[in-house]
Image 1 (cartoon, rainbow, N blue to C red):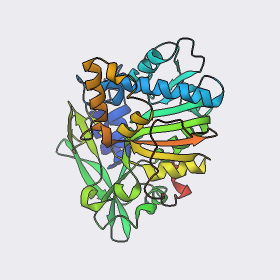
Image 2 (image 1 turned 60 degrees about the vertical axis):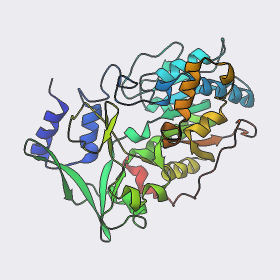
Image 3 (image 1 turned 45 degrees about the vertical axis):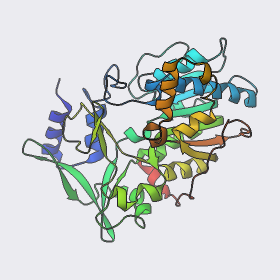
Image 4 (image 1 turned 180 degrees about the vertical axis):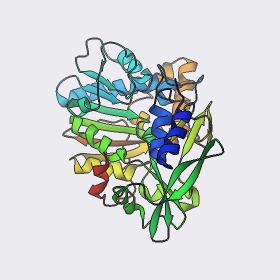
Length: 365
């Protein structure tokens, strides 16, 4: 079996410098790629942690929310998790739900992996939008792993950072946009980006979010991810060089050209784009909050005073303001459900209205 690195070098030799999105797609999802494994490298023994890998308290909070949603919707609530990773969140939800729960439990992942009964694994992304969920459509670190392009503001226009072969490895090369269709994707960022600033954008952010919104018949669309609203995402004082990040053995760095296929590659998500896409699909925005605020709103504190010390320590890690407690943000949008009194804590609204989205960005799906 050839390696992702070897295949990428051959492609560059044949086709010339590649858009970074194509490099990333091969490195993560190609044969032998980072995510194309029986079990992703999540947890203390892996490369990074998620809320569910830290503690089943996250899944228990989701189960509690499902029960509350069921009361509002007049029947046991469904759950669809898009991008379920190693399945640990779904396992915790199943364990925490009351016996006899009749709502459907669905999962979709680009690389299929075993899931606990009675969760149904959807065979393809096309099946997601057809699911018509009455309850909760949920994702955790799904959007930050979508292949993204790297753009550089150059005067009044844009360049694209592509990947070329150099000295047996890879290097950046500044070039014109690789496809005309990328211009509508990047143009809404022109007023915020400074000359020379790098902006990392995934064409599939809005198209995938539109599919998830279409899957929701009634209830909540909840998206947990690393990211910011647009004005903060492009803050040149902090993110002049973009948001590309690589994870290996719980260390973060900025070089995607080492350990190709053996490290995670991500970029922060533009939540303004997701908010606008959801509202175009008829969803109402309830809040954009930190992971700590979200878990508190879903009742994570219930019973913690009686919990074992280890469980309380897990809760502290989930809520830690110096780590995932504030780094992960949670976008909550709703369709045809009364959210009054649904949460233990109020959900803060986004701080600014999203910039008008260009419909051309959706054409790249």
